[in-house]
Length: 166
Image (cartoon, rainbow, N blue to C red; front, side, top):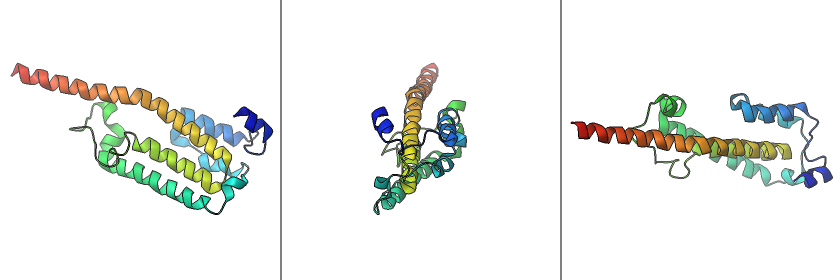
């Protein structure tokens, strides 16, 4: 990867402060991403400016938003923003669309939207930042999935113990 970047310095402009601000924002505070703003000052690449690329970009953005919005709908506001971490559990884990497609539709849908935006703007730096987004999400899933599984398992153990006590 570094060989590609060093032989093609115009692919990503590492001198732009906004690129580093975006990368740090993604890693440490994803609520305040400045993704699109960082892309404005980055160089484009001819491969990303081909006539069919915007179609792929809009498709990724649309599908990504579909996954994000439908998962919010399936979980509700409480399940989306408060749920597991505050002990407000669903009766059962949600397995309907979009959770029957992927266990993390918000993360993958968001990543698809980032990739779509990078393609729409024709900026390789956007693809690099989208990859960082995916990596941060995968790290988060490494913690969230076991946590979520355990709190639901704990609730089931407590329910079984409660039935035995009666």
